[in-house]
Image (cartoon, rainbow, N blue to C red; front, top):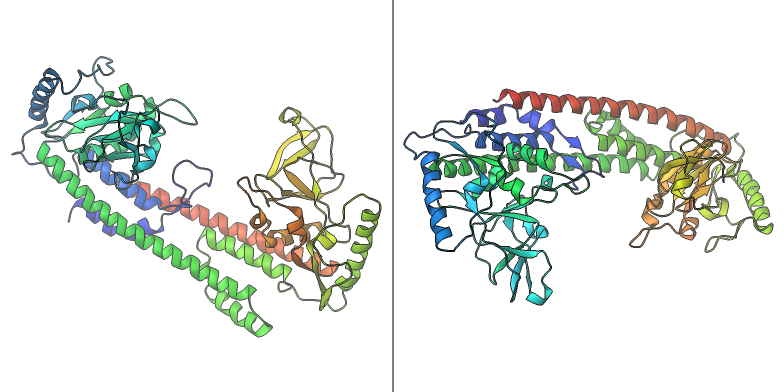
Length: 552
């Protein structure tokens, strides 16, 4: 067993527990999780491979220096025969700074010296088009190519490639859209100008180049020379000026075989970890759903005993804590979080007050009558609670537009967009505390304004409940309605009439206050638990880094 394999097997619990949640707005993969430990293992494998530390050297191998001499002869012959063009000179800044020490038999070379391109052409007949979207970057192959007529050719379809050519996307290179042309495509393959093209000379393995271009060593070089912020890129000249650590030809193949073997082991670990995480999420969903779906007190008690008995194994991830928060809110609006008090004024009396106030506003033309909801007065009492439609008691007011130039940072009142505060302004639109609901963009997003006045822009609604309702209770209730699920269209928007048709239940005002107090208390405990989990996660990642750093 190699040293690296021993590191992998001796630290299996560490790799499995080191998971990082990713921002939904981050670059790259859309996955909600980053299996940090395995990601770092993959990086280590490639790093050791290109430094000559993954497989033993064989003194009988022909050294890379001799290989480079043969390549020079081959290159000159291809140029003389007119098969390739004389390469442009790569960047030169005097003596090269070598990034690390190489083993015996290895040599550093510029990428320009170990391969060539095939030139460019404008397609003149039907062709196989390879753009960035055609790449399976995990496998390093082309699998979603298009066959186009020359009349359909994009202006960027210009670079000639052949079987064995390595293509490297120079736009947003951190995405690692790199591949080897893995077969002889028919009709003739033409690649996008978004790629740098390198076809290796004899003795150079395309598979080794592919793995080198994915290594942390080359990624660091690219990061240092790329330009641009939204779409960082490097040009061909910078690409071909990059150094490659070149092993003897025979060792290149041994390295590729060992990398593939270890990556397969990582694949297995990754799948096991994903399966474990998914199984845990399913368990959490099932046990918490049993609480909210319990048909009676006995079933609820039984479900609660199952959950409470396994708190230590259930609440171990941010997902599980978020699910607990959802469950708390759902139980709250179902009347299962705090006990009912028969002495509370019934919600039916509360509802009559709200309806009278709302009818008065409608008669005065201050608000419009909601469509497609139940007739006022037809409600079903549930103990001290009462059921009704959203639009019976709530009104969603359209916000007003406000130019960005008017969203001053020195104004007096907060300005709310569809998903939070976007600025301040020296005048207000809403005169009382309210709930802001995203109408466009972040449709259904909820924010609470507890200031006396604020401005709500035209991409959001404001909801100012009757003074007979607890603002905080309404805010929690809205979270359980999942208004974001009502948003539709290419640019999702929330239609308020669809929200008005939703069924809701209202508790007595006194119970609303008890519910809010209990929810606030439990949410604070959840936040403390989440903070502890995040700190533990950070520690796990630091341990992972420490183990891998010591591998050298």
